[in-house]
Image (cartoon, rainbow, N blue to C red; front, side):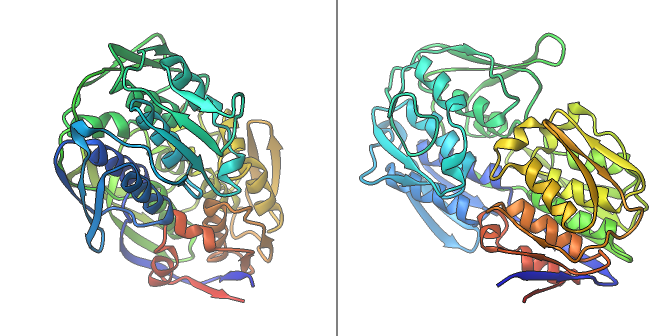
Length: 440
């Protein structure tokens, strides 16, 4: 059975953004390894994050949900993480599996990591290669995909490493391993990537250094032997999830949406910067902070959008938002060009191919590049009427359903089950704002 999004005249209202997925993963991991008891509110309770919670339990932390979106975690502290009795299943989560590889690498344990079909197709050498240099072992030897078995050690060797990819997951895995390395571990980034790991490590009492390098390089370092201390914190709202609701307002015949409690972080605001370049009517009001992050309420209204070339400097800050960017580009006047985004080829799906297919089946002219795509905007509602193959990718599914709210004809998707991995309240929130999404 397909799910279909029907065009609506109005998309309007206010929604509290769901907890940020990236911060939720990190909070569970650091709290689970810390000394003491952490209290975390606003945690995203999607499947990806729940799998990380289960993994931390299996590694020896006490993890308990005390109320909706409120969690209590007693960390292992000086006792350290232990070998789990069964494989750790991360489902669809690249963030959970890759970051926890880094954290586990610094303990005397052995753990098998598994995942679903999509996760098991994603490259892992970018993580395992630097961790091997630090002293961790992975079997089978030479394998680049899950399932993998990791054997860690409590006396890792610090490294200075320059990842080939602009990837927060690679940087974060190395920094987490560096917590238990004997000396200074340093990562040289080609371009600054999302910095939630650095911010959250500081909130747990760990000193992390960040300084500029040559050109656009970023130097991030951590000294081993520091202890994580329990915290009481609130998870900020997810800008990647908020982007779908904001986009729905921008393309609506009559849109006016406020998404509350969103994280405002320059390493995550690429979509909003790009939308602003396209003429989006956006506004923001600062409301405080949470988990070391600034918080804002973001407003969006129906806008006349114009195509533009997305600067490559924004790619890392919007790597998860390109599917929904492609949707608003379909409504814009003129061409929107994306290059330098080859990392999209190895996300939950080959997202460049999936984005191109999503647009073409709905009557939008689009050109595919090795490292991006060019959308020929329709200067108004695109034809719609297509059935989108989601390819087990939650962001393709959500983007297509947003498109259907304002296209000329309804837009259908072949599956929505995977949306629960990152945004379990998506359908409820969309309907609250006026969307008409039904099983057909």
